[in-house]
Length: 291
Image 1 (cartoon, rainbow, N blue to C red):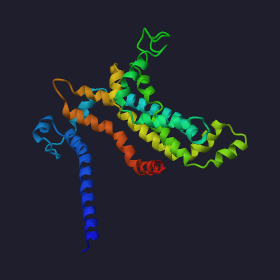
Image 2 (cartoon, rainbow, N blue to C red):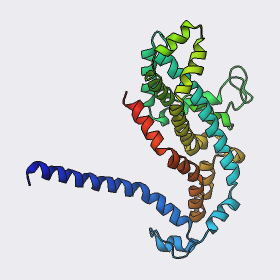
Image 3 (cartoon, rainbow, N blue to C red):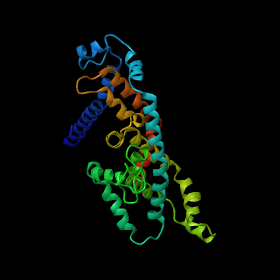
Image 4 (cartoon, rainbow, N blue to C red):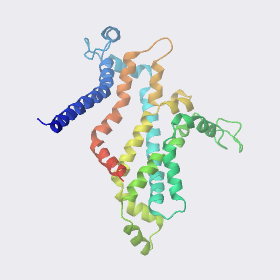
């Protein structure tokens, strides 16, 4: 056996070992969460990290629905996630079309600014975003100078507005529209079509698959958001499901079983979407990323 064949087989073995380690480390926490949600309270501590429950129970699932208003939290998360999807699809595709198809002076600088903003950690912009929402003029009882009220704080808009036009949505849709031929727009302009008509009637239908992927990714981000809703929402009836579940953990006790059951319930919508759309998403992201 020559050295090249040995190196090739050794590389394949190392690749499979690395892939197995990554797969196990990714899936194991989910399996432990599911297992813990099916254990009685006494078994959770006694069994430690054991994955197979000695005594099976669904009591944690009924308990979490009686302890916290899960349906209300789920509706709040659904509203915020769906509105976020609609705004990102419309504004993201409109901005992407503008940067990809129109002759706009300085559009390379604008696009570079969008890409650069994706490199900034979200924690850096939290304080400026909070102050803008708090002192926004004529919102939430504020006067024209932004004083006297609470602005957008403690409202659904406080969660929706900062992510209504995501930089990733603009970047993603620009890549998609650039892959579509320019001749379609030129022919439509000769026929007298308006620029918005060209965007909406010609290019949006051609980008439906990419828009669907963007919608799924945006929904996942909105549904799983935790830190920002925790900062800007105070009323219990406006809490999202991710923030509401944190109420099961206090400084003095933790309802581990119901918390794990609630985590599984909160994860189901995103898991179902990924199960049905995984291949579609990977293909579209690979296509847009390869440009």
